[in-house]
Length: 185
Image 1 (cartoon, rainbow, N blue to C red):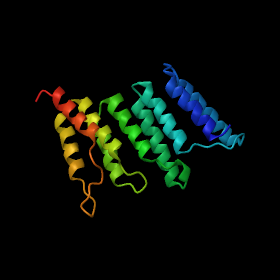
Image 2 (image 1 turned 90 degrees about the horizontal axis):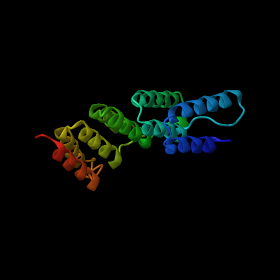
Image 3 (image 1 turned 180 degrees about the vertical axis):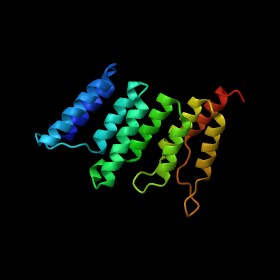
């Protein structure tokens, strides 16, 4: 077994719809770590495996999902800062984390904080999915004004040549319209 095998097993758990996916994923993670420490198999956590594990928590709908996801991303960041390039968090990592904050916590503020962090990282630039995730988080929180402000920010966010860094797409506009439609304002 290698990283691909274990990532596939984690993805199968994420897609299973099983209520106990997080327990099963934790057991598998413990097994992977034991294999790695003993040198039984040449396997170690990399960005793909971590992102797959984050997807397990995203799909779990458990109240502790945001706390566990935060722990996973912090672990990735520590490993990367310690020189493990294979554990470097990428845009997918942070997009999943923002999705967890949006869906598990309905917390637009936490999702937006991750986006702001991404804007300052050299290795994980936000994309339209990142911004749309925050727009959706504000929509789920019922804060149409914050969603509108984020859309305005997307439209005004220019690079040094005056070009938009990230262009809003149809989903961006639909999400903000949905936020206003659900708003009491």
